[in-house]
Length: 264
Length: 326
Image 1: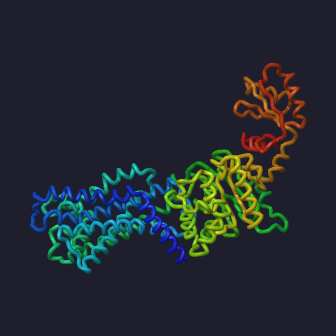
Image 2: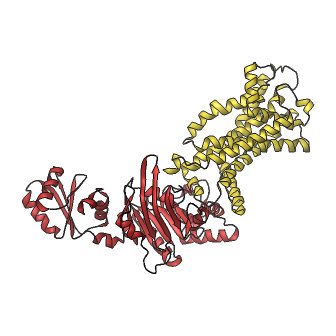
Image 3: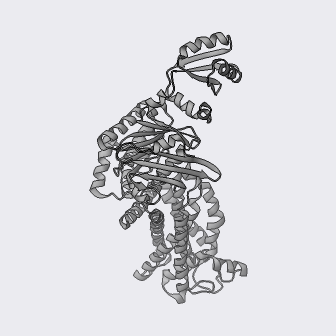
């Protein structure tokens, strides 16, 4: 039983990677756009960026935020493949195979996580150009944070993608929900000094804790990364882990339902 | 709800081997709509069993239940002795499913598709590779193993689908409209494969179809209409149930003519898409009599031995036909 679980999870996750690298536009799209964001916003806002409390220049401030964006985009687009799998018919043969539902969900999520983390690693190299260095400890911490966040975000994408019949519908979700979620996570601007309502929204946003986790992991120096409105390392880790568990649980649950597309 | 026919299907044949598939009292609803209504039948091991039915007859729902894509609501389905609801995984290992819609990953090669499929069924390593090679050879696809499936023709894809369904050596093969999109040659090949599988490996095939030629090749046929099983027998016996010959008439005013023919000749007349069909022992004589009785009102007349199509029309064309006859 557990053998079938592991083999099923492995084969489905591995398939995600193979498919990804065979679609060149996906390879460039997921990584290139955030890099362009980073360079343009970073260069454009560097001069006017005056955090309430002083600190890093904008390119450096923005860096963990862009890392989170890469994870978000890659993870989300990885789960859009749920819609393609259904439309192209691949999903139906998985649904009647003797693999546990958990393996099907986990395979998808781990495949998406691996893709997101791989792209995150590529982006980390660019940090070196801005004087962001890594020790073995900070590298390990960032890697861990990326794995956790990518998993949570892939799960989030899965929940939306499962019931969706077209990829167009998914773009609406990205625009009205996922992009604002990222914008209001402290990735783009600090919560400190914003309007109280905005501040409260940011504190309720689970991704705020993910971005904070990434920020702390970059330096492993709470004195450097602590700021008003930025959750501390333990809280950031706890909420992010909870978020990951929650999205996985909901993905698992929703995958037990049959949608119209399965019954064509 | 149990029709005499269902009871007959349930009665075990003397000293018959264990059935490959048992469907008992299966009813399925989508909301208010009843898709299947108390369907029961058994499929014998090694036979090629056809499910014939028009759109909306419930055959697609039945296929989904058999393939375990849907869970049963009422009644039970067992495959090689495993209950589809309670022993789902054991049942799944016994069945190979070939869907009507393609299920191959287009970005993967033929072989990669088979390897992933094998993993999902708990196969792996050299055994899996050998089995995949063997099947590709059997279906004449060995030289395309490294090709991405998006580059294959419809017929080639269908063969890979078949190899995919057979990879884990299932004892029961389920095929949903397997001849859709195949040219007549490929269709005959498919029938030959299924017969070969039955003869060499004892594989039972259960397929849905609306192709008369394909239905003709089945050992036994079940005809579904509006969610109910209305006939179950060999193609020959089904045809024999229609006595004599079938006369089909087209006319300008089919409804009025149907009534008049029915009165004058004491016949059951079915009107279907503007054509009238009737059965009589001496159909050829009826042609002459019709011409005399209704001069100028008949456009074309056709007379022939009953085909499966006639059986199909008779069983499904009008729901209450059977009842009015009794």
